[in-house]
Length: 259
Length: 68
Image 1: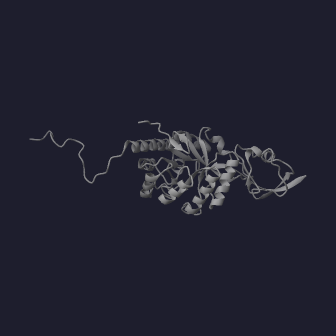
Image 2: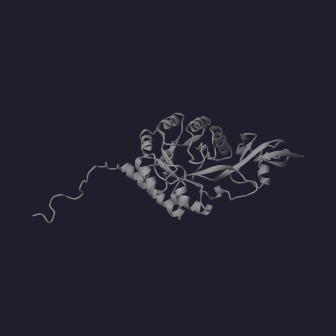
Image 3: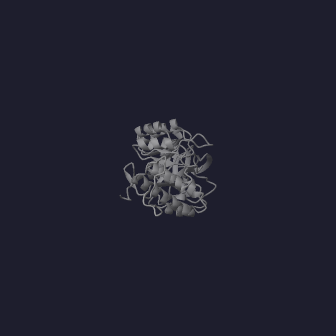
């Protein structure tokens, strides 16, 4: 079995199935090291107005040249805001790929499915490769595929909550019927959560807070890389069926104490 | 001759006819990915050297930042 089965999004192959965010790191230096340890080839960034009074470091100076920068539309509450942000990013030289987030709810940061679908259709029409962030909804998944999205990215649990796969059954249906790569995005708190998503058959996962907020982000990035690889390998290997009763692993006959 | 423009919601005096590239340079915003919107429309990076600012222009200047 090949260990180099690539993740293919919109015809472009990627060696890593771990996408990473750049938020919440203490320093850009730590972020750079953690991104390297993660092996990630797709890295998200947000787009914000420059504060003319405070000149912070330019994050792109700390990002590896060989990763795909994936601008997100975080902060957008409507389709129109998201389209505007994506078009600004592309015009300024960022890739024409966009992680589409339309989030009107500040408490749970849950995405608006109606506006997300509307924005996705507009952006695909405008030539973007669109990776929408959604609740695990198999019906919405089909609609996003129909308008031409390159992936569908259901959340495991609310962003930054670290709670793991809370709607596993819905994600299982999405895996089963996926026609474009399914990326589990948000809410994965530990490598075991990522492995679980991959074992379920997700094509990739996107992780940010669980790495950035670890005591040692670089070591945690490596742990997530290994977990994603292990989960994918397990899925490909075929996981055994669960049983109701025990099934002995050792021979039942011929024990030493037998008469 | 100076012109008055809004940059990220604040008034700025610029030299009339100054290019987008010139403005970014003067403000020290020549970052790798300075993103510019002028009067609601994104400005293509390839045109930063040729788009000239006019009195009353509304500019948004953005860039990539850390995010998930």
